[in-house]
Length: 259
Image 1 (cartoon, rainbow, N blue to C red):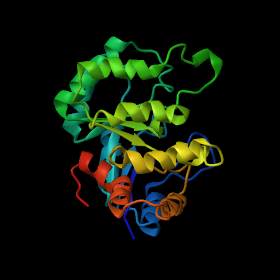
Image 2: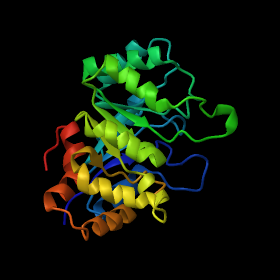
Image 3: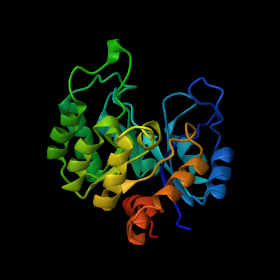
């Protein structure tokens, strides 16, 4: 069985999830990882649920196979100092969540973040799920915000969380020509399974396997469901090397973990 490196999980310090009756404890995630043969997973900090940089890093680092990434507050007084602090704690990556920030920042500010992360070697996980109520809905395409910021930091390691959702193919072309970019297929893989969009995912599995990784979006999706979906991929006409790349090697290489 090919191991999976889950590129997106959300264990929380208080074990709760977005005011829902959903379990998001570290113990539950650890149990799911064992059941689904997921030896490594990204633990992504989110705003709320008791989150703070120091405690989240400490708790996550004490769970075998978990790699914590920090939630970046784009409203911090000094983004450069905030990123330096995150790096000094020991984090290897950050998560930027434009929707939670209500898209309230400029290309100049994002460029500063990308430049500093490139200097520090921090991997940026960028959430590409932009959809929300109309008052906070972006009136521009955030894709070009990323593109223009990347021009200032062209060697930045970037993971597009959810792969661009329904704009998956557009983001795929960006990743295809830039080896420092990965598309995480969490959410998109499950949300569009009964649409023609799922055919696009299968197409990309065959064409750009070196630019893809798999995330569960835990606790939204159980890790055994991610395992089941990956085993369906294994039935496609894909070389075993491609399956290994998608399941664990691509994201593993970002975090210097060999498979």
